[in-house]
Length: 187
Image 1 (cartoon, rainbow, N blue to C red):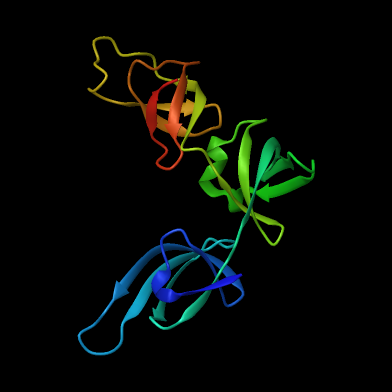
Image 2: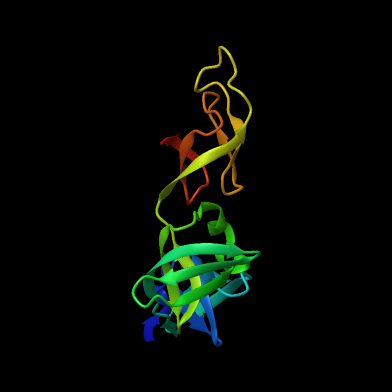
């Protein structure tokens, strides 16, 4: 743990507050005309996923959480539990679907992913910016439609449903942005 001033909080920073781990989602530095400056923050509890709006005085010091990122291979899914294997120690780690959130839609068996650990407990994944997924089901191509005219829904091999151009068909592989969940290109 290292301590940082509240004025140095940035979006994405992990902090420990009241023995809970929070990721800063948004931070605003405010200096009212009267009174002292403060930092208004919106944070998400890493374990429960709940949001917290918290006001720090500009002189407050917070504990910054340091994560250990390890290369792991996604081995298999068992219901709502996802199993990963540490590529160095071959140790197995289980992460629940609730902890992973939207990341579950971008996991393919045997994919190598960076898993974030805090005090030896897995708290999330560092996904690549894009992943290539196969289209499991989509409507047939529309004759005479241009690429920019309209989009159609496509269900991918992981169950994720995205909007794709009309020329995409079943069994095509598409590149998907993991931050926005949007179609990028044909892979």
